[in-house]
Image (cartoon, rainbow over all chains, first blue to last red; front, side, top):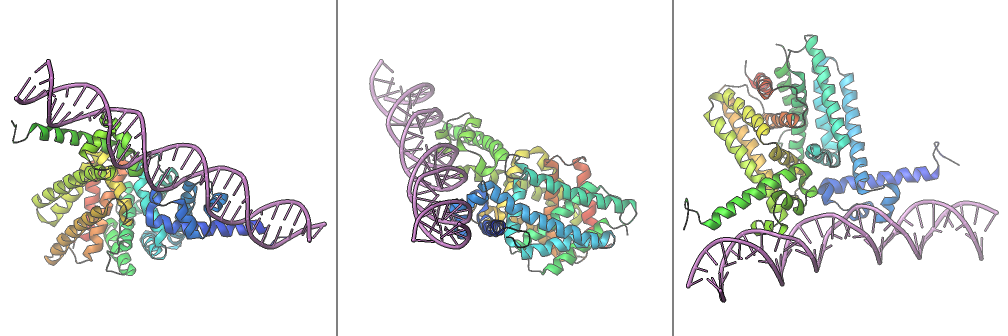
Length: 204
Length: 204
DNA sequence: CATCGGACTGACTATACGGTCAGTATACTA
DNA sequence: TAGTATACTGACCGTATAGTCAGTCCGATG
């Protein structure tokens, strides 16, 4: 017997996995990877520690799964909104807006995400895969910028540096909101950044 | 007996302290705070673990000292070069140039510095003081921008967001160089960024 | 009702590591 | 030379915690 093509076991398994990841996100967000203990995550999930190990092989894997989830979601949302947008100006606006809005709705995830950037320079740490992913995203942005420059939509400039700058300044404003340093609304930040970037790269 | 106003004890003490910090910087840069062990640092310094505890009360203090050192140096260099520079345009150029050049000469320190940003959202972690320091720097930049806007040197725009963006985009390019993603020279990056920012905030 | 299987539990183990301190070696002093 | 102070050592201790596994619970099955 099955529902929606899923056995009872699969349904339960997915439910528990999601439940554990949700708790893990909360705990990792608050304490960071090393600071968090598996016991805490288990407690937050309302399960015994042993149970977590029925669904994940290690603490690290729990962390990776929680991170991957959110990264994929953010990446897809950003990509989709950029595709939909018209012209380079629209795409950049979509990039900035999607990311800034995402933080507001996913604070816990963003804390983990942000912390992972700190590990970017520690090859042995958790996120080897994460570094590649980040680089891909920057390079995608770079490609878009280069194409726009060739098409004369924006002025010619070293696309690699500009892409990284754009990526990181956006992340900077995400961080600023997260730390509660911003007295402005998301919309205002989006417009400020968009205007700034557009003047910076536009060919006017 | 003393030389240069320092007792023999003081001279030795300063020498050992510097020696330990230098080793600590290497190890922390490679492994991060949690990943590094005191034994490793001791070995890197060519001293026994017990000796480290004659000069520092804890692992955390060693880390903080290594971090503080570099942060102060970078902050002072940046401040000095900005003061010396003429006009807002010169100051921004000095800000970007000083920081980007600093990474090249202090890679180990920068890895630690960068990793610490990841902990910015974890209040219980190592750097409570670090967060305040960072905020101060962003606010200083913000003040300069506001003054320039009042004086009509640049167009009016929300200075808080712009300051953070400027700060973080610079850090982004520092990171890019550190990760070996940059095929450009420091000078090129400085010029690219400077041009970008100036167009972004200029009132032309 | 008796038996079975699988989800779940939490006390327990093994280990890694921060920090300590009794002991050694060396330089200085009387 | 004997005595003392100082810098240093590294084996050791206590603790924290990732991961394990023998045992419990409970719903399903015949």
